[in-house]
Length: 120
Image (cartoon, rainbow, N blue to C red; front, side, top):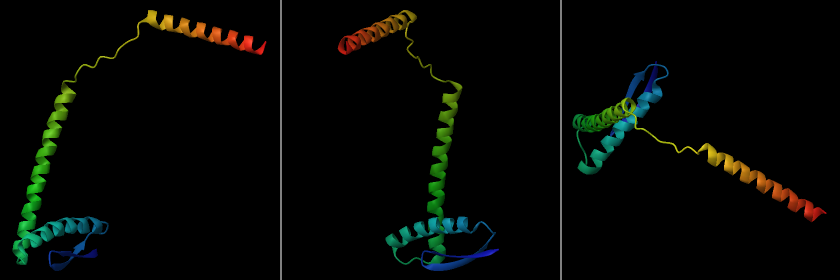
């Protein structure tokens, strides 16, 4: 087990973390500290238990809001997947393809004749 040190608000902490989970703990502590710093910037010095409570509540509110948005997006995606909209792709008629191919062949023949006249 590794010992991870971090600061939240105005207090330093040290916790044991499973090997490989040190970065996760540090990242979580940084998120909590950012909330705590925002509270301290607005309210000044706040007792540690209250600071942690307020920061935790702010994060819980943000989490709930994010969770609601994710659920709405999942419902919307499910609706789209269950009822896909019809998409029409224009199709070039066979006659037009043939006419364009014929025009291209004529243009190539004219270009060859022009080259022959310029060379000869």
